[in-house]
Amino acid sequence: MEQISGPIINPTEMYIKIINPSLHGKTTFSNSGSCKNLIDYLSKENKKLPLDEKELFFNHQEAELSSNAVLKLIDNNTKGIAKGRTKFHSLVIAPDPQELKHIKHSPDALKQYTCEVMKVYAQSFKLKDGKVLDLDNLVWAAKLERERNGEQKDGSNMHIHVIVSARDKDQKISLSPNVNDKQRFNRVQFCMKSEQTFDKLFHYQRTESKLQTDQIRKYGTLAEKEQYFSSLETSPDESQSIPQKKLVMDLVQPLIDSPHSNAQNEAANETDYKKRKVLRKKKRNKGPKL
Image 1: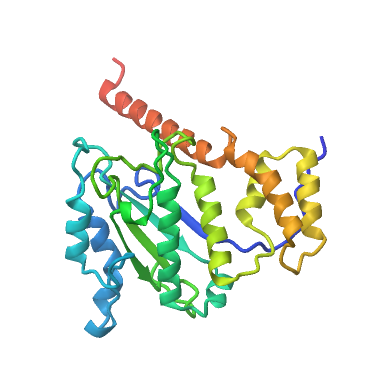
Image 2: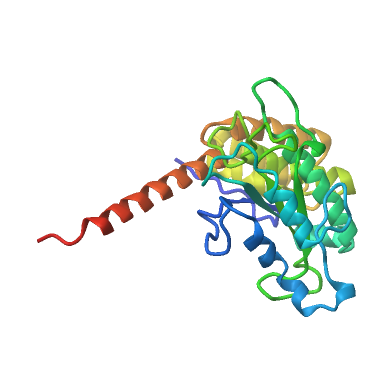
């Protein structure tokens, strides 16, 4: 069968990741206990800055939150969570250099966008009673960082780390974005809506979404790939027209809702990882054959 990879285009890539410490860096922190280790890790940049230049945490209610305030905020919002279960979640929000340039590398603009992303995050949970959550239902805090892996390149490394409780503000609802159920929380859909929120909030004319392209490349039929990449080739240097955007969403949305989407694959990978870990542990405990 003929394989269609699409034209060589440099898509804009908004990087939004829900961190799973069992897969993405358990050595740094565990989210089954206190968030102190994560807070300490996120405070590393401040150690070499003078007092008036230190970057504090923030959320939609407070422009400045100390590390101790965040620690109390998250660690005290765990009522109803069993011992050893997830107490909080961590997100990374990192616009690419083009997107940062569009907002003129403004920390205030990026913080504003972070609040909008967390609003999308809250609304992405599908509850049994049909209730829709909003920003005020979340307990969270975020911190802006200007370096990545100790490097700083003309402001292009500016990004956000978020810590959000695994319980709602009333401590009655469990909020897990890593749940293996797209009917509860669809991670691909969350990331795509967050990307669209950036475009709308800052009037950003996106030529192509890498997330959308990845979905088409991996899960689209031959006809869908031909139609999608043909729509991109018609105006590769311009933003998509309204009909083009509708075409793209008509093609991509069913793929996002499919049980074979990235969100479900990631959850499956997590399950496989845990199974392999248990098997390795059993082998170690078994001892050598005599």
